[in-house]
Amino acid sequence: MTALHPPHAHADGLPDTFDVRVHPARELRGTLRAQPSKNYTTRYLLAAALTQASSNGPVRVVGVAQSEDAAAMLRCLADWGAGTELVGEDAVIRGFGAGPAAGVTLNPGNAGAVARFLMGVAALTTDTTFVTDYPDSLGKRPQGDLLEALGRLGARVSSDGGRLPVQISGPVRGGSVEVSAEKSSQYASALLFLAPLLPGGLDLRLTGDIKSHAPLRQTLDTLATFAIKASANEDLSRIRVPGGQKYMAERVLVPGDYPGSAAILAAAAILPGEVRLGNLRENDLQGERDAVAVLREMGADIERTGDTLTVRGGQPLKAVTRDGDGFTDAVQALSAAAACAEGETTWKNVSTLRLKECDRISDTRRELEQLGLSVSETGDSLSITGTPIIAGGITVSGHGDHRMIMLLTVLGLRAERPLRITGAHHIRKSYPLFFRHLEELGAQFEYLPTDTR
Ligand SMILES: O=C(O)C1=C[C@@H](OP(=O)(O)O)[C@@H](O)[C@H](O)C1
Ligand SMILES: C=C(OP(=O)(O)O)C(=O)O
Image (cartoon, rainbow, N blue to C red; front, side, top):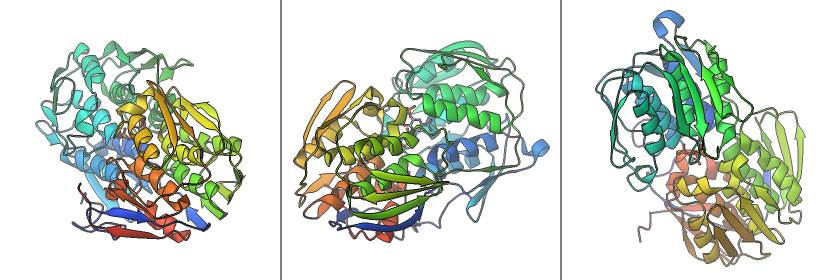
């Protein structure tokens, strides 16, 4: 069984597509448990499938995310021949090891990390084709740097000008290879998942101005959890993985998700009340953990007790200037706090945000300007001047981007009048229970038929 839910039923109990009308909230109050991490779910599921079940036995991935991206990874792994059984909140994976099936067409949905990690592993196969039913989002994101590296390693690769659809065939022996890490760290992560299963391993050099170090460290952490040896220098510009290794693990536990939680923390910070958010371990490699430090620097009252954060909201916030590359998936959420802070906040070094589900610099500027904010952008930065009053009472576009939907929802809670966000069902890419979690804290939403204008 691969579907996370029966056909046509969603865990949030909402229709397939919907807009959301966000009602202003006076306060947020209550206790939540952070959902399972997106980045660790995709990694652990893949590493479990790369574990040979006939010698290791199945791998139990405890507490997997219930999102569309998690479902996409499970579906693709099953299509490649893995056993993927869901038992309660766990996934039990009978892996194919170094032998995913040949001649398979994979559809990773709109999941960049899933698509790219699997493109690396596809060098173990003959004739894997990647397609997407999101031609306007994942279909536009660049894959060329990864495909070039695979080609240099000897894989046969074809694509639509470095974009999906993509075909990949191995075999590949391994050796030394360069890959650019300037647009995305996911290309290097993809090669790292492949490396231990190659006879010659990989001596990987990351070129360009390396971005998103944090998810790369999550990949190295995952390899270590599955008993794979690898060595990396301090700045991750060179990573060596010996070949002929075996992925091995019995049971791995998915930690809580910082990127999605950053939106809850931002909402809790800008509204009065008290919100407790559990399941967020302190020592975690997710870079979006920095959202806590950034919100504190802005003036938010956040206290940590073990894995639980308590936000006492409604404190006046002030602007900050920060390099956002370390917490790329929390920049949208933190932009909600910036929109309510005194002064001009700047997120520097965030050029990769232009290459996500939408252009998270220009599209964010446009939506925030619609809300009456003063916003400016450069090639690699976004600046937002906060305002004490957000009028609301309009319709804004979610741009098919879960993180944009989170940002706009948080601002809607602070607005004077209701805010309608189009295509709000895209929240399911990473955080299907986002609206339900906020409802538990007292927020009110109306779910409306999608306005396709
Ligand atoms: O490796 C991963 O799981 C991810 C890496 C990041 O992308 P980039 O490396 O493209 O910045 C991040 O934005 C994405 O949500 C998940
Ligand atoms: C950009 C994201 O994901 P991906 O690159 O995996 O599509 C994200 O989760 O914000």
